[in-house]
View 1: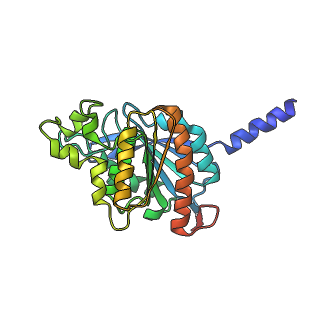
View 2 (view 1 turned 45 degrees about the vertical axis):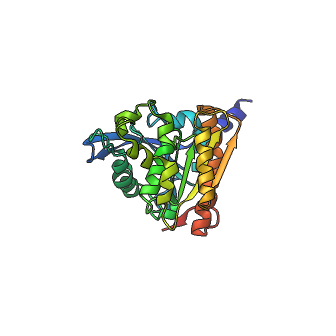
View 3 (view 1 turned 60 degrees about the vertical axis):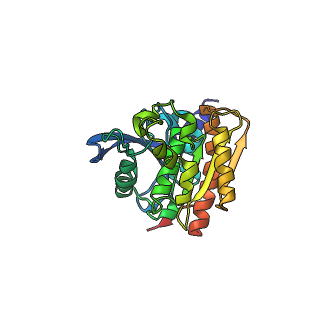
Length: 279
């Protein structure tokens, strides 16, 4: 039995994901920000890879996604040949450039600084069609906000149990620290809500997928987003299944979203497997 055990252990090591932690300087916020990077086990600078950005939820950090969904990330990194980028979005940044706190400029960091840093450091496919973004909770809001406000960056956008209607959750999760008090800034809260921002989708919108558990705290808001997208005839995929707003649900949902993302990236670029191209 010992030789078999040794063989299986070696196989696991060989096909495990390459996980790196790097720091990226944000000139906008004048600080270094930690970022986890998951690379295919056979990553090579002689090939180019599509990139998926994963945004963590409120009170999380750059390690959250590996803790919640390492198996799903490993599978897609290795067998779909993708690079995963998991930045630290702060405890409560909401991934925006805050009108209240000028020190919080996470939208600028991701859209202007992080994407460029990743493309400069790693062998990525740099076209919009080869880049996707999704997130959980606060990260779901951030993914939609970044994709809508920066239409040149992401060909696919997803959200898992995302906060898509800010007024419905006023008073929670430090939102007033980022958007100001709701009573004094109603217009800002309304126009910053994803259910209203969909009017800003470009003529060539990203492919959209979002997911919410039927027992989750954001279920009603995500259903409303689905209905508004239907009304505006915006193509999208909406999934709801039994579940709550939990890391377990996020893990399950991410598996489906990565299948969707891989398929859409493949269709957008008209590739055949594997999802890489030679230089």
